[in-house]
Length: 230
Figure 1 (cartoon, rainbow, N blue to C red):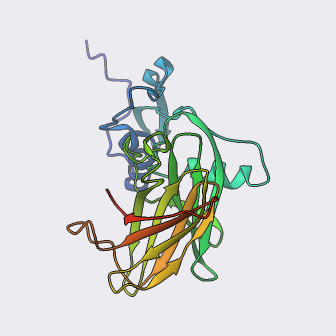
Figure 2: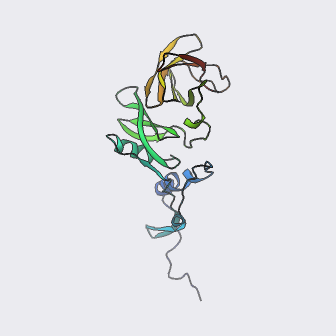
Figure 3: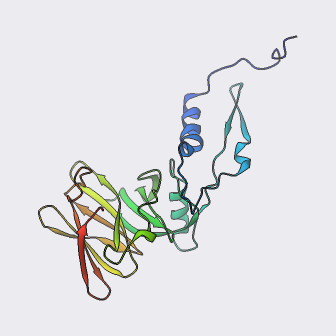
């Protein structure tokens, strides 16, 4: 007896649908490295299959949507929520809020979001989050690791063709952050809620940890200077 006689003929999944399922539901959760204190919550129900019917094709894919990251209440809640749900974004559980923002021009910008432990960066196109800069937040660049002698830390850099945009976090008592380039030039940063963004002509060289430096001014007036990255 042929038990598959009544089933539709096997056909390849439409390319566009396949790519979207891979990008939004499968790939973001491959190789996840949950932190010890904040494991990502992938519920057992994620193992349930989603059955889709397209042009007579029956196939199943797992759903991985609930990471536990949410947008905190506030005027920018919708923007933060959109940032959390951009493709490839993997955020540990927490209530995230909008922090530093920098618009390069009328169409391109960046938004940093944060909770009490982590921070992440979203690209903005026409004011709408389109992707995250760096898909997974590491456990090293966190607020818990800031110290009195180094009240800032490096997050990421977007090295563009003619300029670079750098992102970092800072302790609550940091009132001002300046990026010092290799030539000694000082660039003020956009500092908000423990996050900062600097726009300069100097890239952050991954092979040279002294390519850029930070000068942080505390709310007491004390200045602390050191490498951007530790």
